[in-house]
Length: 183
Ligand SMILES: Cc1cc2nc3c(=O)[nH]c(=O)nc-3n(C[C@H](O)[C@H](O)[C@H](O)COP(=O)(O)O)c2cc1C
Image 1: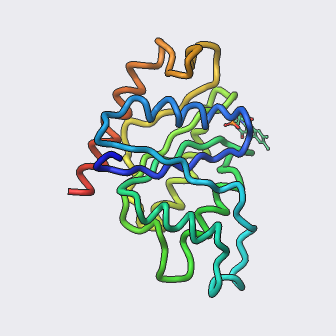
Image 2 (image 1 turned 90 degrees about the vertical axis):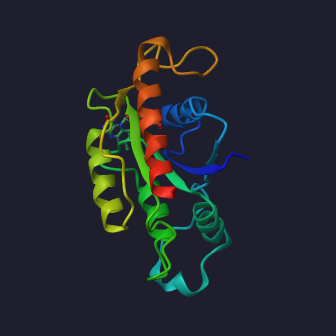
């Protein structure tokens, strides 16, 4: 296991999700001192504040995974010009009970891929709002708005040639951001 653990939160449950593929490919761009774990959010119950005193096992698992990490990587789809409900549900769960948020203070990166030309820009902006409230410092630049097109991934699931240089640079700056906030 690497020195820095990154909890990866994929904002899509779709079997062949582009965002999950992107998350998998990005992890391969990091040096071995970083390890990546995609946290499970698909089995979380719908958030209900009545349950705060006795959070479900799946919620406690998520919070433990987040607490064990030095940084967060959000790779999200855009649904109706915002973040998918499953992602917001996970964020809300891990932010509670009040005063016991698993998000606070850890560095994050936000990016995503959509079929539309706006490349999840609006979802990312909404997510940045939420994370600001949760006291999560998010890498500001560079931003990464990706459109799902042929060639984004190669046959082995790596980032394709056209996007490789840009996404390697994005990852390098994200990883430096994590280190800076972990030092
Ligand atoms: C409910 C729903 C709403 C969507 N809204 C948007 C949108 O606002 N912007 C966009 O670019 N794509 C939108 N899409 C298309 C997604 O970009 C596309 O389904 C993409 O594959 C989702 O990411 P994934 O492959 O990781 O699941 C929407 C898809 C669904 C199912």
